[in-house]
Amino acid sequence: MRHVLGILNKIITQLETPRDQRPLGSGWLSGALALLASLAGLLIVLLRWFPETLSYPEIAFIQDSGVVTVFLRFTLLSGYALSLLSLILSARKSLGWTALAVSVVASLMATTQPQIGTEAPQSFYFGLDYFIINVLIVGFLFVPLERFFPARSEQTVFRAEWQEDMFYYLISSMLVQVLGFITLAPSNYVNAQIPLDDVRIYIVNLPFFVQVIIIMMATDFVQYWVHRAFHTYPVLWRFHSIHHSTKKMDWLAGARMHFVEIAVLRSLTAVPMFTLGFKPEAIQAYLLVVYFYSSFIHANIGWKLGFLERFFVTPRFHHWHHGSDRAAIDINYASHFPIYDWLFGTHHLPEKDWPAAYGVIGDTVPKGYWRQFVHPFLKDKPKEPAE
Image 1 (cartoon, one colour):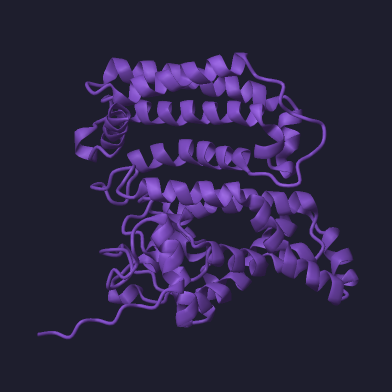
Image 2 (cartoon, one colour; image 1 turned 90 degrees about the horizontal axis):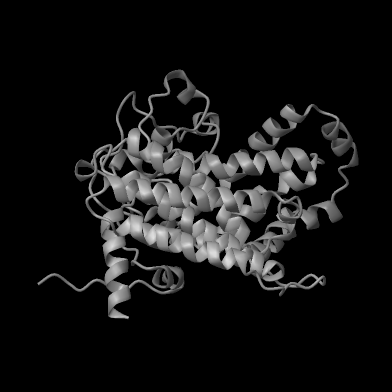
């Protein structure tokens, strides 16, 4: 056990290597991507071993199409190739050897897949495939972007507490069935109580692209006010403060959200999307955009986007929302379109500046998933009087 913990510490230490100690050609990027690919390959194999339990039915068509087999082979080959490249380039071999070992184990497991599945669908399931798609695709996109275009060059791609936020990602993905039920509950009530047939007939006949834009505008309008409420009312802020507790912004930071906030935010913002008659294809397109966009606006990417910042939420715009500077308090609530902040008086975006620091003022949120989970339900301890 001590040997295993020692290996894990070496891997984490190498992943968190400061930027100035991992120049291009050092083997760090290839090693990090190799580990990501090999672990994804292993998870895909587990998904194929237990499809009824670990698969999200809404995307089961991906497995049935045979795409998973091709994707698994590509992922494992990528793991092999990138791990070998890292071993050649890097003076420290922890990432390369670990990625290579995991790729070998996943390959052996893939060739000996047991016949465990049954034709009867499970009543309860976990979204492991949901997690794989999110982390693998989004991670492969944003890890290189943060490596080459950082807003804060001193920040490592895998910064302190990244493991904690990855666990948040895992929990929200694996509980996708529970969250899906909660998300649809208010929409189902609206559909049953309010006659919207004429509106639905009009919207369903709109062009696909127009439907996607309307969904984004409508959901962002609702999201703006729900988000603002989480900042306005102390009982809600206790939950939302968990999201703001991260002191380093990157593509994983958006995953840190309390389960209660996820349930409230998703269920209310989804109401216009599931009640106004949009085509399923438009809804799926919107959801795809949201997953990438959420990671993008939290990412440590320092792109200067000029006039686009007037019309779309960018990393710099949202980073100001997470700032702990005095000027950053209670601003920039929109997730897609800054126009809502313009209209309702909460817009703040200096011409070039970024916030000096991030996090909750006073650092009142504890560290660790489970301590953060119970934090909103506990009373704050009274401060001891100064001597």
